[in-house]
Amino acid sequence: MATIIKPKIPGAFPIPCGVAPGTCILVRGMVPPCAKRFEFNLQCGPKLYPGEDIAFHFNPRFAEKQLVRNHYECSKWGPEEVSNNSPIKAGDCLEARICCTCDSYKVEVNGKVVCEFKHRIPPGKVTHIGIEGNIIVDKIDFNGGKPPEEPKLPIPVIIPITNGMCPGRRIRINGKTPPGAKRFHVDVQCGPKVNAKEDIAFHFHVHFADNKVVRNHFAASKWGKDESDGGMPFKIGDYFEIFIHCYQDIYRVRVNGNRFCDFIHRISCDKATHVVVDGDCEVSQITFDPCDESAPPC
Image 1 (tube, rainbow, N blue to C red):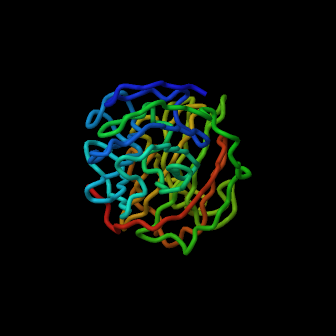
Image 2 (cartoon, helix red, strand yellow):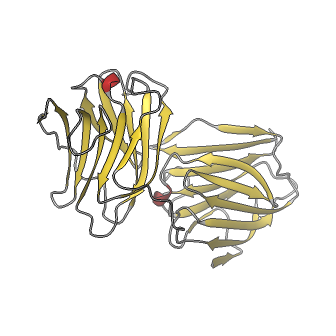
Image 3 (cartoon, helix red, strand yellow):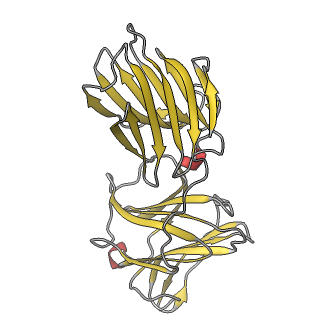
């Protein structure tokens, strides 16, 4: 455990070993009686707001009696999550614990869980905790920098797409590439069989040796034309989060929170029934989420 005693506020403080599932940050201090607001920011660099992306913004506002959560990315705030009747009061002693899980940040204040915030930016990008506003901090404790062993799905992973693929569907894949990884791929395909025994609507193939990601389709036992522009967003040994958004005309892929590529449909998306992940990777979860738009944002 690492500890910072009586840090000067406002300030941004490096998180030893970074943030991963299993990391907990404990902040002890006091909220002055005349306090209006303060904030904890789990952020992606050392500069205070607005200098860095913020993976998790925790902001009690005493005049409004609200507890606001959000993220900040590419100089824009996301949608706020707001709780009324904030459990934190001006004049109180404070012991706040922020813990990272595979899916979210969970916050306890004085022993009581007050909120959970789903990841919008991969936690592996977080390097500092920024603290600003009306708060006196006695100390910050960092614990659990090494993530616990996560569940691993057996490779190849073969999962049916819940309710089928259609415009508006989004696939989320969380995992890690092990040391020595050479390649892995994700297939959105038209059946459960692997090794090119089904038509593949979208083939997403990460080649570390060639430093490229190939996209293609497979139909009637033949591969189509490769697409491989855009560089390499993955690193060997790192955690990754892949979102595959299905829109009316394209699949759009985001890797670790950043837009990576578009792939125009070559097979009607409603024919896709399964997701397959195979190769040199460890997959902890695959989920299917609704997406708000049927047309891609600019």
